[in-house]
Structure formats: structure tokens, C-alpha cells
Amino acid sequence: MAQTPRVLFEFGPFTLDPLKRVLMRQGHSIAVPPRAVDVLLALIARRGTVVHKDDLLRAVWDDTVVEENNLSVSISALRKALGESIRDHRYIVTLPRRGYSFVAAVSERPADQPAATDLASGPVRHRSVVLVTPFDVIAGRATGPGARQLTQSIADGLAARLGNSHHLAVVTRPRETRHPENESALLAFGRRNHADYVLLGSVRLDGKRVRVMTRLLRTADTTTVWGVSFEDADADLFAAEGRIVDRVAHGLAGHFEEELHQRSARRSAESAGAHRDYVRGRYFWNKRTGEGLRKAIEHFERAIHSDPGYALPYSGLADCFLLLSTYGAISPRQGVPRAVRAATRALEIDDTLAEAYTSLAYARFAYYWQWDEAETYFKRAIELNPNYGTGHHLYADHLAATGRFDAAVESLQNALSLEPWSLIINADLGWVLFHARRWSQGIEQLEKTIEMDSGFAAARWVLGLTCLHAGEAGRAVKELEAARRLAPDSPHILGSLAQALGIERRRAEQKSVLRELRDLGRRTYVSPYHYAVAHLGSGARDAAVRELREAVAERAHWAAYFRVTPTVDVLRDHPGFQRLLNQVVPR
Image 1 (cartoon, rainbow, N blue to C red):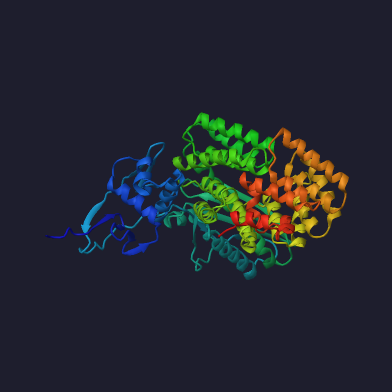
Image 2 (image 1 turned 45 degrees about the horizontal axis):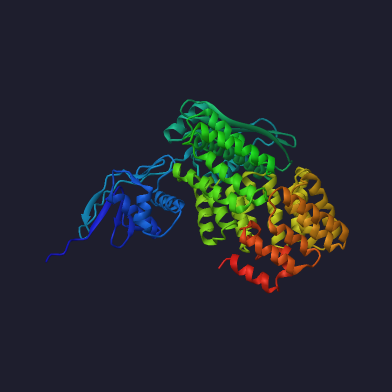
């Protein structure tokens, strides 16, 4: 009896071998997770039709109980492998609330038949193309070869910096162009070289000051879409060069990131009001206060009511419930499932949304202690949008909790390069340094954060913790009392203050703060973790472990730091704490 020949599926430049479960592009294998291959096979088997999510879950995961976001992760992995961009779904189309459809033409050929060699090239991610030209030198000192070398160096530096962006590609004028070209000629050169924009600039050299002016022109209609001017005071031109490159590159990156964010934010918003509510919600979310989070939820829910198919407000809602669970306003068992449902809904609408992947990653790390899954989600979020500062920020917390402090500091530095004035990211760098036991560096960083805003309670709190474990208990009490004045109903501040007062042997004050904490717990949710911290100040180790046992049962996010936090060092030899540690530490 003749054997049925093995068949390969071909679409675009791709070949899928269903028997070997291998995806290839022009003969080269592409790394794709096994579950994602199963999803692709299920979609191709019913190509041209809508495959409902429930059908895909049954086909791929059979009787295994899994969450819908596992399917979203597999779809996202396929989009990455197939080279699909946020706006270019030429293979897999998402149908909100229904499922997915494979829409590309598919041909079948026997595996023993040679493949065609003239395959079409795959889809290319769109990146804005910028023509970078040497800046003009305006009359003043040093207008000879040195000044021309400076302007060429600035152009080279900008081309190198901008060329590393995920959103930009760079073209430059040939170096043999000897004479200055006027604006029209440069725009024409840009159009001939398929540039979307031309960056023009001038450097005025006057005494010890360098004045820089730049403009970004769109080649299609010659409109100026961005510009900046500033001065740098330095007698050494080439010492100023690096600062000029940094300033212009940062400004340009911010312009294109904002443009990308606005396109992303609006691309599925049918209502301008929904978009405004989303932006306002993020504003209040960034305040990191209970009142701010409640206002943020109001705006996100209003945006969702106005436009249920708008993905970003669901992600914002997820972030609010995660922070409310972190700060102790609601129990993690209440808040985290709501956060996961909201983030999953965002991915159902747009499975390329970095914000939603970040939310799910943080939930996996901080509350479910699923370390490998969290790592995968964080990396996917950063890959989708490397300029989303919160992605780098929260990934740093995950890295710190697993003891990878150098990588955590690097991730926070990436976040700060994107959002240098973010109070919470600056304070979180101090938080990571606290867990790394780099006391002096942490104190310095937190003092800088407090200089930015002396009323930011989170920085005061972490500074108090750092001073306490650096052997400065007296200063720790002062900083924690200052934090309490700024946020009087903050359970983590009260717990830490009770611990510090106990270490200082100020027993009456410690008991008073502990009563204050318990009174707060009668009015609102307080994690048992904070009672445990308060007990540690008086050496009540057994009582602390009992509270920590309750905290683990309630999925307190603080437990994610058990492996590294100095706060519980006095319990490391306690058998009860060791058993708890085994429940949450990375395996």
C-alpha cells in the first residue's frame, strides 16, 4: 500500500513542516515555542475562517486548564516569528471577542519536492527614516577646519545614536559633499533616498558659549515637526560635543516615541473622549497614592465605557489593581485576579501591547511567584516596546528579587534614560540598592530623589529602611516619621517605623505605632507582612513568622523579596521562615 507523502505548508517566505513541527524562512529554521507551533497548525488547518479562542484552547491544550493569556502569548510569539508589526497583520488577524484567523494564502507541496527559490521577501517593520546632515557653522570663533570637524562629529554621533533605535533608520549625506546645500536641496536628497525626515541644525560659536538650533522637517510636505535650541557653556568645543549629541538625540527619541505612543493609543480608540480619559488615568496612576489610583480607575473605566474595544484603558486598569494590592488598599486575592482579567482583555484586543505584557509579568513575579513565566513576559514587553519605561522599571524589581542586582540596576538606568524625572523610578533604584546592601549608594540615590521632591513619601520610606540596616537607627526613625507625616495611613511605613523604634529600644513609642497599625487594619486591609515587620523590632520572631505565614497565604507581594530582603535577615535561621522561603523562592 502506497504511503501518503508528507506535506509541507508554504505561505510567503515561510515553510511549516507539520510532522517535524518546524517553521522555516527561506530554508532557515526559526525558533518558535512548541505550543505556538500547535496554534499555527490549528489556524492553518482552518485558514480563511474565524477560529474561536475556546476552540484553539481545546485543540492545543486539550484538557489542561490554562488561562486565556497563554493563547495570547503564543499568538504574540507567532507574530514575532512571522515578522508582523503592530500595524501589519498580514498572516494572523485578531477578531476582538471572537478569536483569530489565518488570512494569508497557503500552498501545499510534498516534502520531497524542491522549494521555489524566488520566494517573496517577508514583511518589514516600518521605521521612520531620518536624513542626518552636518550642522552649519554660524560666524564666530573657530570657523575653520576644527569647527567643521565638530559639526561632522555631531552628525556622526547622532547617526550612531539614532540608528540604534527600534523606531528609526538613518541615512547620511556622502562625506565628499563639500559645499553647504540649501534646505530645498537637502529635502530633495532626502526624498531620493526614501527619507521621511531631514534633520537640520546650526552651531553658533560665540566666546565660551555654543548655541545649537535644530529642526526636523518632513520631506513629504516640508513641514517642521520638531525643533530645539539650547546653549552649552564650555571653552572646549569637543567636550561640548557629547552633551550636544545627547541633548539632540534624547529630544528626537522623545518626539518619535511620543508620536508612536499617540498612534498606538489612538489606533483603536473610536472616541477622542476615551483617549483623553486614558491619558488622565495614567496621570493619576503615576502619582502612586491611594487617592490617585482611585481617580485613575474612574478615568480608565470611563474610557472603557466610551469605547469597549480600546485596549489601553484595560491595561491601565490592570496596573491600578496591581498597585492597590501592593500598597495594601485591597487584598492581593481580590486585586490581582481583577488585574489579570483586565490585562488579558487588553491582549485579546491587541496582542502586541507591551503595557499589558508588563502587567501580566508583574503579576506572575510579585504575586504568583512564577519566575520563569514572569521573565518571558517582561522580555516580550520590552521587545515590543523598548521605550516603555515602566517595562524596564518593573523588570528591575523582578531581577532584584532573584538576586541579579547588577542587571536590575542596568534595567533601572534604562528606565531612567527614558523617564529621568520619574520619582518612583528614581526611588526604586534606591530600593534595589537597599536589597543589594549597597547602603551608601542607596542613601545617595534616595537623597537625590528627595531633592527632586521632598514630599515624596516612598523615597523617605526606603531611605529610612536603608539607614536602619546601615546601622543608623536614629536617622532611620527620623526619615520614617517624616514619611508617616506625608502618608499617615500607609501600612508599610507604619510597620517599618515600629521596627525601627523597637531596634532603638523606644518600646512605648513602638507599641503606640503598632496600635496605630492595628487600628488601620480595622478600617481597611493591612497585609500581615506589616505586622510581622513590626514584631521584628522587638525580637518577637515566632510572632513574626506566624504573620508571614498568613502573608504568604494571602499572596503578599512582599514575599517575592524573601530571598534577598535585609528586613527579614534575623529570621534566616528560623525553621518556620525557611519553610516559607521554600514556597516562594525561584527554583
